[in-house]
Image (tube, rainbow, N blue to C red):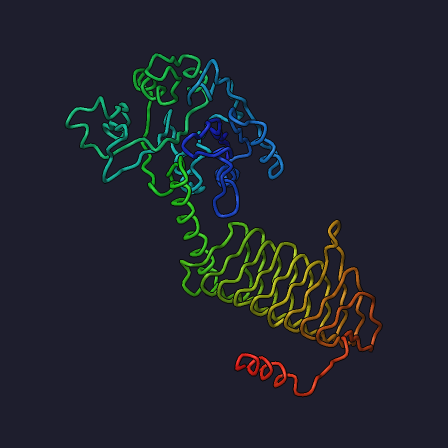
Length: 436
């Protein structure tokens, strides 16, 4: 489609009360600005992001994730405001869609509605039950006549429910003509993009209102707004995956990253958290388990299991209070209370309660390799680096600090000592002393 997109992301966002740039605050696993870019990429091959506050940091984050994005630095010292942000922006196509980097809930479909028709300007308009605090959009015969700030509204105008949604699709020629003509004669001494509406109306250009859903055009200006947007985004994500066949128990308690993918028959129980670019295929994730950027196939995890990043779990049972980190398990059983880090474990292996891989020596992480059909008894410590070959038995309570050959039994225990009648000597002696 012959549409250019400009995303305004230059603001400081002081109401977020954070050292992190506002547009980099995360919603469902990625910065809110990235959600806007994703929607824009579905419409355009010419996307420009306008930056100023912490521009280098934001540009670096974008370039690490996307290719083909253009950047424009606002001269905010001389030309502050949204109108100033558009000065010097060059668009390739004849229509320019102007978005805000702090509106992460916009969808490609809603943005597409703003690009239709041949008006000089298509302007997003919200119809609010309570429009107080907003400037009113005056519409006459399906065209915008003006935007009136609330303090300037008459009693009749205050009853108008139409307010500015903050997103515009403008013909390139209009921008090239009007942006250089903006002035900053106002209380804030800023250049306002909204002034082009009045200029267009005064010159008898068509300014068409496009009514949009309030939910999709919510701006995020505070941590409270961020939490509200997260709830909406999570509801969308859950509904999408349930429509695709994922079963969810008490879905409102489940968190799913926007980058996660589900295939086959998947079940998510209450309190589950799926983070990062996790991929689940025929997986059952039980209550209050956490999956972080990992691959789960034909396996169950939990309740209260944790799969940390870069793990691969296939045909495996992971029970309660088991933590897996950067490991590959295929055909394994780890029923309860275990920590497995930097390990590769083969089919048929069973890990008892309390088994841990000692993978960190204080300086470096080391690998544990366990073969097929290995039985690891409870309370065993596997001191990496170590290789345990196929068909090995490791007795409970063993500390394994060297490689174990195929078919061997590994056992390390201090000899068990017993002292006859110690119970009676210990307690009766103390009692007899007290009696005296």
